Amino acid sequence: MITVYHLTISRSERVVWLMEELGLEYRMEVHPREGSGAAPEAMRAIHALGKAPIIRDGDTVLAESGAIVEYIVHRHAGGRLAVPPADPGYARYTYWMHFAEGSLMSLMLIALVLSRIPEARESRVRTRILDRMEKMLAFVDAELGAGPWFAGERFTAADIMMVFPFTTMRRYLEYDLAPYPNIAGYMQRIESRPAYAKAMALAGPDATTTQERTTA
Image 1: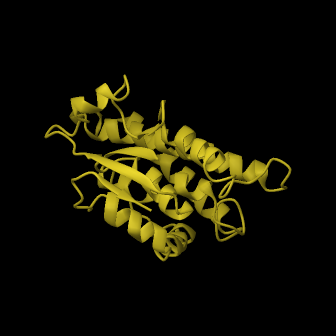
Image 2 (image 1 turned 180 degrees about the horizontal axis):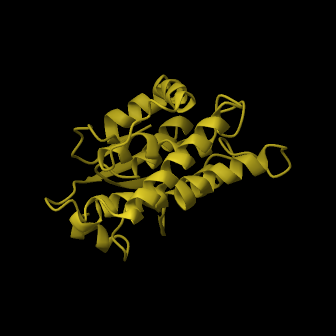
């Protein structure tokens, strides 16, 4: 059975959501953040970097949400929620799987850091970063106009990767989704998924689960 080490208000909610979408049995061990917002030292005993998400599968300990999502989809789900390489939609699926962290979250994290430095709040650098973020969100919004999901007509693991910047990340970095109607419509479709609702109740930013639990 896979153990998901869940850090509260973090990307590890993706892994819980994936497990619920796939209907796989798993054990969730909750690690509340410290008062400073940092991950607790106990997570460093699981993985040297002490960052979430982390899973354990037998003797395998794996970090990084994208790596974990791909590992579970291919090792435990027979490729469900993935797009096979021979499929015409494979390139689009792969693009959005990596865009989530490689482009969107990396830019948002720069914006977040600058927002917390008083001297940088009115700087030209922050203005340029926020402008780039607006352009990137407009690009995402336009791309979502082509289909209900990021990879096209069916929900995939790319959607699990892409949702976090539009939801929990906004607890740290405030921005308005109103100018992006396709993203807003997409989020309505996401929120109507039973597995997403269950995962957020267990591991979302407002979850109250503080104890270890096993679920399927």
